[in-house]
Structures are given as structure tokens and as C-alpha cells.
Image (tube, rainbow, N blue to C red; front, side):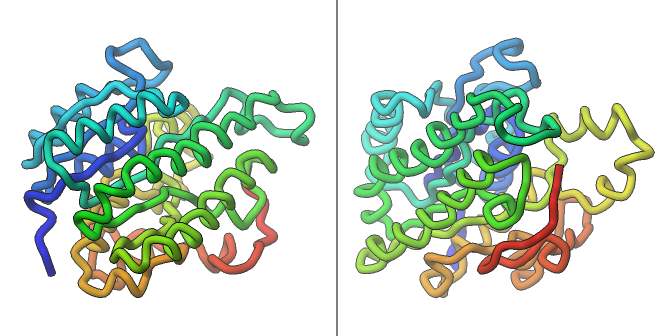
Length: 286
């Protein structure tokens, strides 16, 4: 397999959470990683994390972290990001579309009409921003026969947090399929990656508040870096074009590639409980 070392990656929405973990893991593989987000200093968001702290962590892991302040709801800022990548490198090997709006009230119990209408923002920073980022990045990706990853979840097939969240994730999955058709003649692979329950800053706060209630879930949760390890392996896979256009469960790809989480555990696939990548499941997760 080709090394990810000396490769150029962009990870959107990487101030914290999944994006931060993915960026750090790619840095650990030697990549130059452009880290995007809106948090320039602590306090800009309710949860800790900034683009600068993530970029530093990428560099400490062995790569080169480059922080870029970018609101992916603004196409002009997204365009400027990829203009910077083009000026610096003239190519892009990995694009991870992770920036997603998760408004307050997302996990509130109740029917969708009793939740804020702002939940629809996931179709802007999420579905639309993934599209626009890939649109601006396309020439760079074609130049390197790169890889595009849409971070997604089982919410695209089961009821999870309501119809706005579900529609947003389902749209991302379909977008990966259709973009793969257009990119295929150019050797660019596109996949949607279903991550499991992640030990993000937000999740750790929930677990800490009720440790007994979530003890079982915490034991099987994935570290945010885990998804990055899977993306690194997928990028190095000489047969990755055969996987293009599909939805993949991160835990299953990891097992196939012989990858374990950073704590040495083998995260389980939740296919049996939450449904598979091709049909709608019946589980309700709140």
C-alpha cells in the first residue's frame, strides 16, 4: 500500500469531536492536514477545542497541521480554503467532509414539531456544505486521484434524533453514491463512512453525568481517532475504487484492514442492532 506520508488532506469541522480525531490520526500517518472550523479560541463554542489546538495536535502526532478559519455555510470561505490548498500544493489527496451543524435540541425527546425548526440547519452545514466543499475541491482531487469521505451514521437508515437528522445523513449517503459516478472516470473514490458512538467531548460529558447508566455504551464506544485510522487505511488501499460509491461501517472496514482502536479494542459493528447499509432499520435511538 502507498503511504499516507507526504499526502495532503482537508478535514472540515475539526475543532473537536470526530473531525479532530480524524485529523490527528491522519497526522500520525504523516499527512499535511488542513484543519477547518469556526473556533479560533476557547469559549467560541460551548465545548472545548479550536482549529489551532487541533492543528498543533496533528503536528505533534507526526504530520503538519494547518489551521484555517472557515465557516462552511459561506461558499466564499470554502472556496478560499481550496484556493489556499491549490496555491500551497496543487493537489488534494484526502477530503473528509465532516462539518455538520448539530443545533441545540437535537437530542430532545419528542416529535419533530416540538423541536426547534433550526434542526434543519443540518441540511445547510452538513448536506450542502459537503457538496460545496467537494465541488470546489474537485480539480485538486482529480489531479491526485484522491479520496472523498463523508462522515455519516446509522441515522441515515434508522430513526435517530428525528427526521431532520435522518434526512441529512441519508442525503450524505446518497451524495457519496452519486458523486462516485461522476468521479469514477477520473480515479477519485467517494465513500460514506458510518461511525459508531464516538467518545467525543460532548459524549464524555453525557457519560460523566450518568456513569452507571452509560457504562455499557462507553465500553464499546469508538475514540474519534479510530475513524481517522480507517480513512488512512482506505486511502492506502490499492483497491479503494472498488469500494467507491458505497456506505461503509467504520468498525467493519477496520476489522477487514486489521485495525484496532487506539486503546487496543476492536469496536463492534452495530449492524445487527441498528440495521445495515441498504435497508431502513426499526431501532429507535434517542
